[in-house]
Image (tube, rainbow, N blue to C red):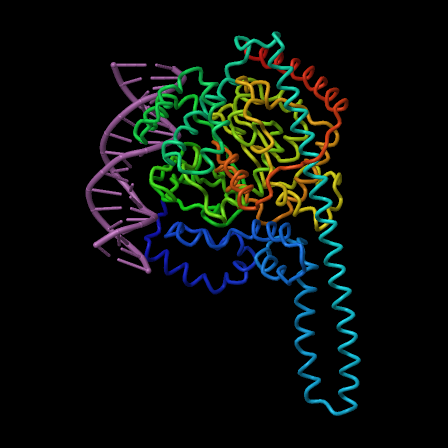
Length: 529
DNA sequence: CGACTTTGACCGGCGC
DNA sequence: GCGCCGGTCAAAGTCG
């Protein structure tokens, strides 16, 4: 709560507005959707550049100047297709200007114009070829990326299979924290199903996942399976399971705005002074659909007030707007990669939270890249398991010079592969009712490299914070799977024919992972003693 | 007038 | 049992 009266505050803001204009422009992409007052309304507008740019770039095979829109929208994303855009614009301009000159010219002028036109035409053709070449490169990168991810998924599935068959890891030995996963997710799924009434493609499409969650629930979900789950009922169920359900994802990012924009509509319903922090904590709930259970808390960091901490909790019971969904798609892969588990897209928060509750340090010893690259930490002291993604520092990989450069095309990669990201690649039956084994896959060199590349690419995007927020709000409880699924529908790409695999290498990797997994579980178990 | 924010009250969990 | 604290509710105020 500000001590300054609102009107006075408003005046001050108006006065400051002009001086700040230049600053605002600099951070416009973040700021435009922000603000408490009626913030929700206008927020949706700005966000969909990821999808538009990415989708277009992927779907448009012809050079029809489509890059113009996509890149205008993507102005916040440095290096993404700038070449294409600028080239197109220049060419169009030049081409348009040519006939005008030609019309008014004398004979000599006409000759020179003709020559000029020929030159321009040549340049145009050259640029067109360049465009096509770049698109091919982009396609290649996308293909190889999909193949790589496919291999990762397969390896993890193998690991799950072996893990399930391995009697060394009975459920009884699983650290309690790890068991957070299913209760966390099942209510969320149920909530989504209840709110959607099953008319949503995503819900049906995700029946496998929901089914997994319900199976994992060991019959607790049977009450919901009768299809009579009303929102009130779900709410009760959620409250009953609150201690287990509450898994949060927190994003720390530097921002002067009162709230980071994530493409969703939020309504403030409370504000409290939290202990140990002079800055108030604001509570928002998603208002994009009546009864959407997603909530978020926004608070400034006590140590550094420039750092905005946004904490998401819950599962959207509705489809995200294209803008938010697109960004969710964009970043959910990054987060999923960070979480590095086949179920990560579905219940990333739950998985990590469970691990963390058990033993954070051993976890991150085993997850050096995930934790380091994304600046992620897990809070044990929090009342609920909380993943914290610290975006206030450059990823270590970048800082250490591991990724001294990343081609401009790379940032587009994550945006292009979501059509077939996690859900599509994850057969429902492949996810065992033992989430404990799911997310512990160790990253091999290739995956590490991919992760670092993605991290570098994504975090270099000034809109990453915004995008990540959108992703997290969906990842936390099923949105992460909804987004890619919807993305598959929107992009029409599906996952058909994704690359081949290397069985032997995969099996070896799975074996190594399993060994490491066992060691890790043992340490988790020991740490709880 | 409806939607939203503000803000004090209320509730439940948790530690002592 | 009591008090603290985080989270939510809901009435009142604000705004467009």
